Image (cartoon, rainbow, N blue to C red):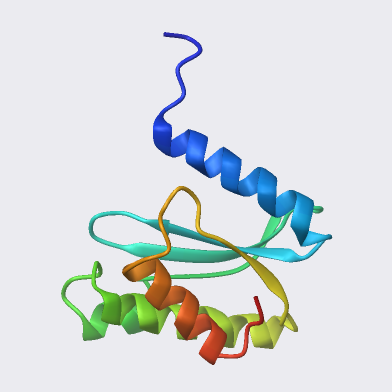
Length: 120
């Protein structure tokens, strides 16, 4: 089982390789969602570092909502990451949905980030 790659990891690799071909050096907005939380981070792949991040575990989000695994929370996280990106001077990014389909919480985060001023 040394060569086993999960189906989710295969989807993630396929999505990221397609993004690398199309991105032309743009920063990447990567989304990770678990059962209870959602995370977003803007990554500079050329330097290998995270520019900014936001999640449902941030104190301002956690204080308002008991459950971090809802679409409303994902919308707020999307707005927060867009605000933080603007402060860093980032406007154009590539959306990396990982191995997840563009639906539900992932879609809510993406749409909120677009409304917040990110272009992708």
